[in-house]
Image (cartoon, rainbow, N blue to C red):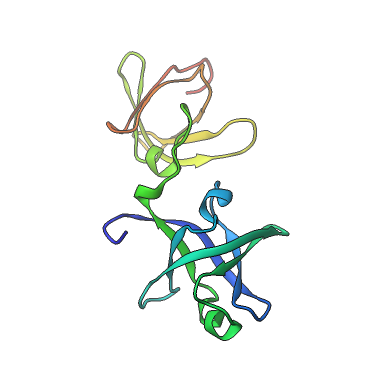
Amino acid sequence: MAEDRLLNVGKIVNTHGVRGEVRVWPQTDFPEVRFKSGNKLLLIPPESGESVTVEIQTAREQKNVYILKLKGFDEINEVEKFKGWDLKVGESDRVPLSEGEYYVRDIVGCSVVTEEGEPLGTITDVLTPGANDVWVVKRPGGKELLLPVIDDVVLDVDVAAKTVKVHLMEGLL
């Protein structure tokens, strides 16, 4: 796991009860996958220090947080120190996405070109205002272009080559 880039999946916000359970604020689109019994996660301290690999014994959702029981930690005193720590997984443990779905970290930094091959700029951010995502493209000269992520606009995404081909609809530029 150490050579991987690490992905946040949650943050321990508090302890729960006296039997060593922790309250976790999920920071993943796949909490049911990440917090499954038997899964291993990396606990990362907030400042610096030694990370700890833990295995989930049990997990349950409760009011927008997850209550996790970590294997080998059976009382509150053993988990108290983990408050504020991040839960992470290696990038190799990413959940595969359906076709047409992308991780933000794969999209940010991609070059955008028109279907004619004209360079438009680089994607700097992904906004999620509602029905569809919007990619923020930094243009030469500093202006931003907001691209709606819809089939009529996004023609091809090549994550490996870090390029996105788009059709510029009327009014986008």
